[in-house]
Image (cartoon, rainbow, N blue to C red; front, side, top):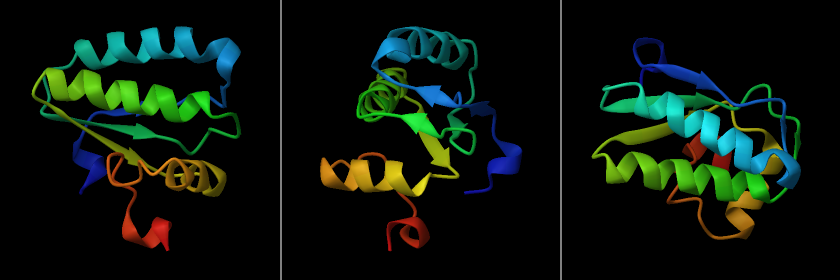
Length: 101
């Protein structure tokens, strides 16, 4: 995937249960505003998060699928990768093999 040519949305630095709903609403609005077939979320800034981050990512993926579009995620924090794998949704969120190793 060549992220440089795709719309890129940044995840916030903090995504915990207290902020999950507002972050989800903001990102869904941003996704709805684009007609691109694929949008990429950049997780580079994400450093303070809990398991609700996984739920938000899954819901954003569902949002895109319902619109007939795709969602990519880049710059996975190692701990988020571990959570996604722990919950068994790594294939749904398409963790790159270099990160999943």
